[in-house]
Image (tube, rainbow, N blue to C red; front, side, top):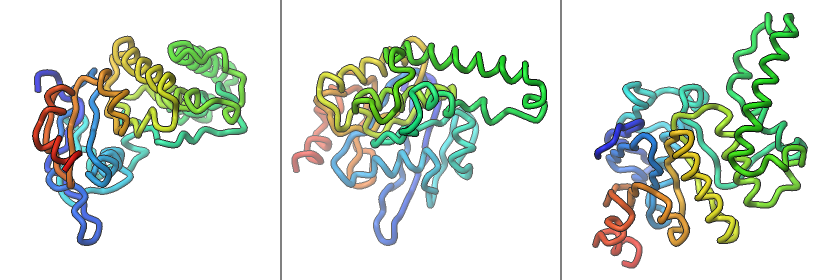
Length: 253
């Protein structure tokens, strides 16, 4: 591990009855990198993402964001600290426009107080800044021309980009992406991954991705963690991990 660690798990254990879904899992996610979790079905990838995001509580171990222990914090508190996730199936407000979805996702909205409501000019000024911010993000994702389109009129790929855009409105430190190219055609899948790399470079963002479509995604990621039966069995660049005998055995054996 050469770069600065932005998030780490330390000996995380998660059990479901007699099943050990995570068995002393330790990962160090580097800042400003695109990292990916791979592994066969049931290897523990989604469980680890859910533990990091706060949806599941670990039975043992710690989750650290920088030097802050967030293990006991609920999802909304982790969200405020900058741990933001998307889901395999995007869940926008389908009756609202792309822009309206972006504005509703903004974390600053939670900071409005009674003075903002009474002092109308102050509230309007904040709204203008949020609209500018939303359009800047939509332009980065090349979907600004869809700003007034209802979310239920978007294609699968456009909806995935909107999901990423909504996450960016909260100024995340790390984005947890659950299968960001699932269900979209290869051309759009490559487009989504290119946008992720662009966001890493332009906004200095950190990504942790769970994805099964290795043929598409591996060329875009910096680091790979391979999981099998609740353990990390390999770590490194995509080329190194894919050649690891344990990884080959996990996928083919």
